[in-house]
Image (cartoon, rainbow, N blue to C red):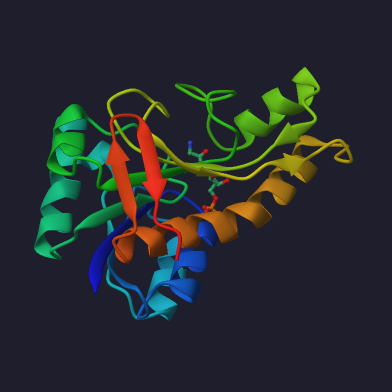
Length: 205
Ligand code: GAR
């Protein structure tokens, strides 16, 4: 079974979707790392008997040290696939080089719209609401050195013309995130995902 490391910063509902759908089936979550000591996702890991570690940036010498500490933990647990599930930090080139095309991120908008530096969490949904966008939805992509710029693995269009607040958009998109992310992680664990430059293909079975 492929060993997965999940990085979180908050509530961890996407982590929960991987625990429920993938963990112990097509893959094994070997460790959860949070950069916030009070992230509820840590409780979700504990409830599922998954080892969890907290690495806080302020306790590290600098951002390189922060990233190096995360890599050390991932290597300790023999992690082969890293999943960013609501992780609100940008990884350093050294981290990305340690896992080429082996880091996936979920972004709560249809990349290449409303993405890149500064677009994370509710900021994304507020910008989408203010712009008057009618269709949004999650994107799962491989991580490269450009923020939210790596090869796209899967997307799901979500009509949001009935949403009257940014919070309503977030809730509707999140519901689809919980299906899309575990599905992608499962496809990777089963060896069905192939990358050719920016083009990603998934074997149909
Ligand atoms: C999710 O909506 C995820 O797409 C987003 O943060 C939320 C985390 O929720 N991620 C980003 O904005 C990353 N740029 P969760 O902690 O409940 O999974």
